[in-house]
Image 1 (cartoon, rainbow, N blue to C red):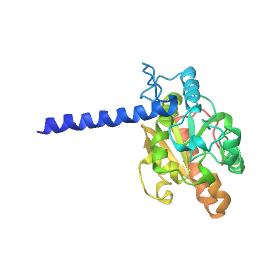
Image 2 (image 1 turned 135 degrees about the vertical axis):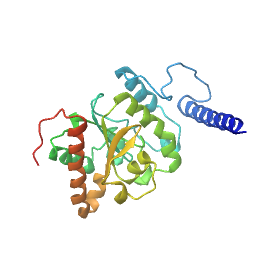
Image 3 (image 1 turned 45 degrees about the vertical axis):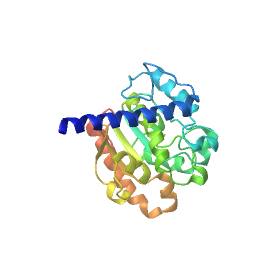
Length: 240
């Protein structure tokens, strides 16, 4: 009976994955089904510049959720394709939706300053979001939107192969950790996503509204630099 239950469980899992795949295909390409041995929505994927570019091109045509109806641009991500440090936020805002680039508004300017404080620049990191399209009025992402978009993020991570991830904000931290705990409980410790260590801290946009969170964020960022030095160690010694 145990073996039979296991087979039924496996079949149910395969059925769910098949349905998800078909919904993805319909959202991307319409009602026709495309079968390929190099489908970018499957895991794992081989790391190459061409496949990351192809993933971005595929995503630019995405119609898998209702956000395609209100977006101006898909905001795929930016940075070195072999970045050791990857930053993951929540979703594009108005400026990001207008330009198609992540973290370009006031929050992005603050993020640049935060990175500079530990001797990093945008040229050192890859930046993206959980969602690749802006939710209307910058509302929180819906659970079904996160579920739909997460395979794209997983493939980005598999292609870039970062050594460390920094989750910016509650939504990113909860999504990567699989936890419903508040950000105040998720920050201050090292988690793992697909065996990659990650830290969580406040989103730069939140810091613009809550100055009292800047001090704990600075503690998180210092921990990030220490973790980076232990796991990567390719930058000159950092002096606080």
